[in-house]
Image (tube, rainbow, N blue to C red; front, side, top):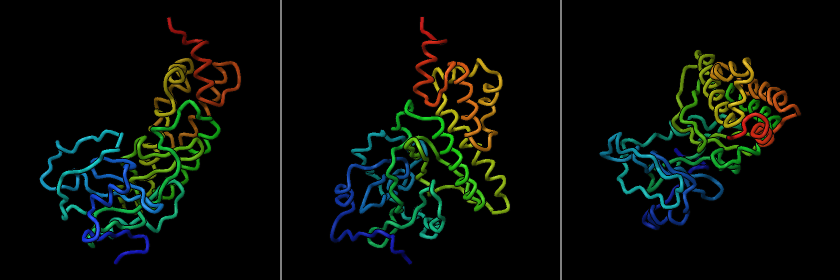
Length: 273
């Protein structure tokens, strides 16, 4: 079938290895394969252990996140490749936070990967945590929750999310690597939303609450209990709003950034001996 967003190469003119070498370094890699930037789009080449012949679960390994020298020496198993219908099942969804596949990558007319929109903001794993402003984080969480609500109504359950496939610039979240998310019937959308919001509330609250700020929660029973019950919050903005008030009370001055809170807390109540 194919779409205008599909990307195809013919190996009689250029080998796949030469083509990918020209696109190096890889944007990222994992057990499924590697991602490259090509003509303003991201190509995810499904050439990792998860799509290769005679590979055991024990041999699907974690890659070094340097990514610069990623080459998979294994032979791709055609029977493991997803269909075009599967790859493109979310392509019609308009959503600010989630980058769904919108094209198919083919080599000699055989599916070898997916094409996705390029996300031009940093990965969360590379974003300087201390620069986060609570007001901006609260707004970003609220917007993200609205986007999660939309995909939940379509029965889409979030999976495989961590700091390497979440992007954040201090103002907004964007998510990539959505190919293998889980599909449910629309009738279960309320349950899917609870699962998705629980996943995100737990992850964001743990990620953005560390060090001295995490230690300070012991000074306030309500905020400590909210942290312990984080997976039950519909939106993590609820926690961060209360956390901002808590930190302002403990620090005895207005607090709106992780850096300022951590600096004051380290001097005020958490001095090292």
